[in-house]
Image 1: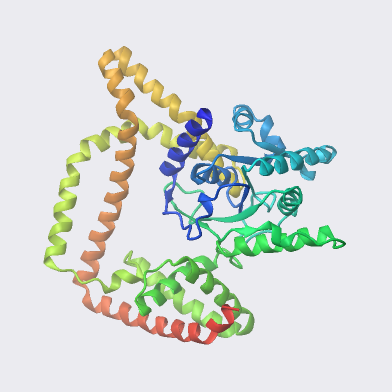
Image 2: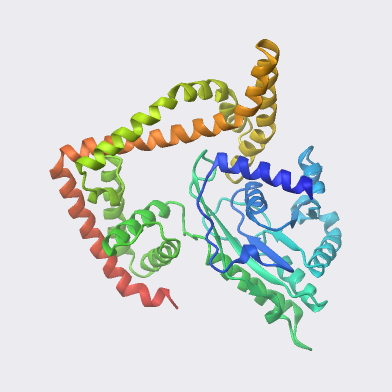
Length: 440
């Protein structure tokens, strides 16, 4: 248990450093459930997906992982230390698939003991813009555990990455409403395979409710800018998860039924996105009013931050090598898109403690024991401060540039606002027209 907690803390810190994790959306409290629980997630990002589930699930969970991972040095040892269970896949070794019965039995036993397990029912990670067809293994495990007396609830967890292979890109985790597996148990004489199929369909629907499923990745910028314009029109905050999913469904419906109208709207929305992109603006920022007091506070706040510049320069010098090594590893090995981030994160997992120890030893031996102790205590805070400083100063520079462009070119700003309002009015009309059908 101590190893589990310590390792979870390390993985959580590592993922917090690599990504920008948004606050978890868990309105039903699925992550806080007691008793027998199966957490199911979508699988777009290799080992990062179970890493996020591991780091953010409040309970001690048992993982199901593909069998070849247990043979990987270091990783295999960590999986065994966490009592993970192997899944034997046909594409890995068809001769070993019979061993899955043992894994299924162990999973059921874990649920009978009131434990939580985590699995990814798509069966493999991928880079497609929507869920793959789910395997029935999760449903079979849940129904067998219920048959033997466990009260099993299944909790869908959506892992939504903005740019999954990019350092400091955004990640949104959404937790859906728990499902009671007992509601799908077949009655006497009914087909158990049909029951597993129905539960699998329900799990798929639950995952679709917490993930953004697209026809193609090229639709993402279209949907995001359209949703932000609509949010501005109706006075809401942009990037609402449910509204983004509704826009994705609506755009697909429009593409299927009225392709000419869809292409015209797509052209206008992406053209507007390009124009505001030239001035590096977001839709909401076009409405900002720059008051003297706001501008003065912005300038003072960023001048105060400059006091930390010497520490940032030191951090950039000390951490330049560990920053670029994972990028070099990916360029050298050229992994598939769905495991690029896995390579980067695992490289950092191995490299970070080594680099921390190396800096400490060098300070101790080349300077003094006191310098070594200071380095040991200050390395992680310095890395964190350097990251935060660079992110916030990058945002501040963008804000300052936007102020100089839009503040001095009022005609341009008014033209962009008018164009955005016109598109938003069209989107509002579409929402009224298609909304009832999207809620069915």
